[in-house]
Length: 314
Image 1 (cartoon, one colour):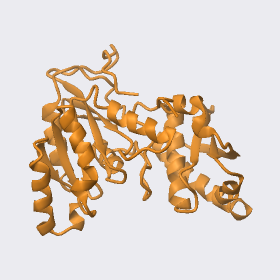
Image 2: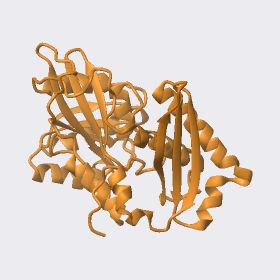
Image 3: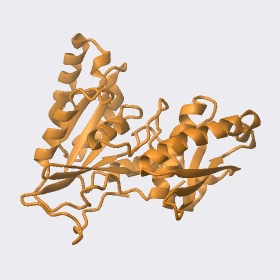
Image 4: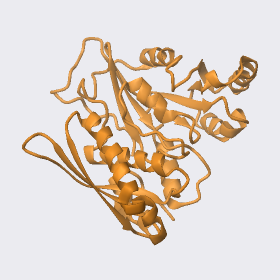
């Protein structure tokens, strides 16, 4: 699923000398892509957690500022795939480059072997003959003596047009990246309404917020073999929303982990997710969660279709 450049609708704002385009944000798992996207957009549109490979789907966050509108494409982290879901996630990441007007590679500069960890990604950029902007992230957590040699290693590849040193978490340096990207966008009418911040369906976005809580609260207790699937999202007469979701796990032994003793864990997950959803939709939310066991949910084509992923080969 890629961000296709569509024709602006008649209802959308068209500014004089307006600019609009798409920026793909790529990187290894846990580099800070989603944190950077949320910071650039100014709203939470992509989930974050301490666990690597949290982002599974292509998320488009929309920033409209001054006369410029940018669709930032947050992609799944690029790693060595082992399962069908892994391969679909990686394919979604690389597909995001097809319609991108600019590319940002974000690297966790504070980690060991920061250059070596993303060298295969850099080589792929070179093979595709794409110019890339580099964002060295988490620089506030490392000594300057290590940072400059690392920046030189990336610069020597000849792939990067600009190198920025940032902290996506605190926002340091992020405005510099944004200002640079705004200049790169082509002259064009805007593709989205001025107040739109994401292109994800509301049900999918809501399920992602619940999955974030699932990861935060279960930490290492639950493997990645879990998903949150939207069932329904309805508006009541009083303006509140009724959201129903299913949490899928692959083994019967995983079900009590999610539920917790006396249902305490699922209650806590629901409460925290409800608060996040109320903030997201700016209204009261009634959230209903059900936990089901489905050993083969990763082999279900409907799951991939719901989240905009290609089913692909096993």
